[in-house]
Amino acid sequence: MKLFLSLLLLFVTTQFFSQNSKNIQPALFLDSVSISSNTMKYINPDDIKSINSIKKDTVVNNSLYSEQIHIRSKNPKKYIFLSLEQIKYVYTTVEKNAVIYMINGEFIKEDIDTFKLDQNYILKVEVTNSNDFYNLRKSESKFDIINILGKTKQNLDPKNRTSLKGYEAIGIK
Image 1: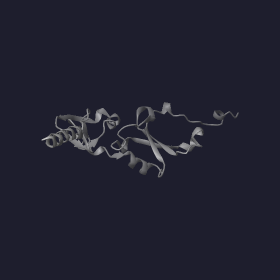
Image 2: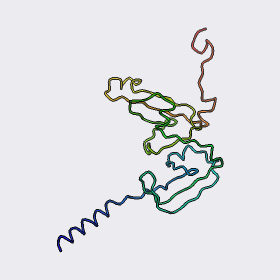
Image 3: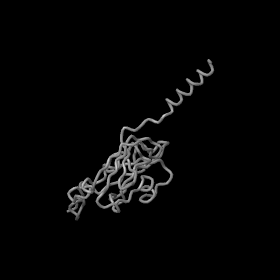
Image 4: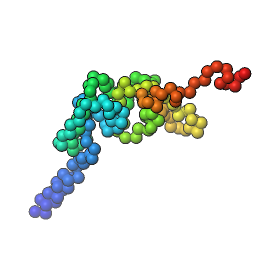
C-alpha cells in the first residue's frame, strides 16, 4: 500500500509539473503565417482588412497558446516574411561570429528564433563588427551587430539625411 501511494504521488506530481504553461499572449497569424508579437510592430495598420479571434488552445513552435488571432491583410501576396537568420544570409556576409540583431536602432531581445520581418519593409542592412569599437578590440569575444533599417517615415524623410556638397562643406574656400 505504501509503495502504491508513493507511486501515485510521484505520478501526480510529475503530471502536475510537466504540463506546459500557457503563454499570456495569443498566437498571431497574418494571412495564415505564424508571426511573433514583435513582428506586428512593423506591419502598417492601414494594410489590415480584418481580425478574428479564436479562443482555442494551440501549439505553435512547441509553445502552448490559449487563443489564436487571425489577421487578414488587404493584399495577402504583398508580404514576404524572412527570419532574422534568412536576412543575415541574404543581406550580409556574416558567417562565423555571434550576432546581435537591431531594427531601426532597437535591439531585438526576445523571440529571435520566431521573429519574422517583411522583405518589402527592409530599406538597408548595416553590419558593425566588434573590432570597430575601440574598447572591444582586445576582447576575446567577437560578434557582429546587424542593424536592419526599415522603410519608416523617419528613415525615408529627406530632412533626416545628411549629405556634404561642394568644397565649402569641408572647410576649403
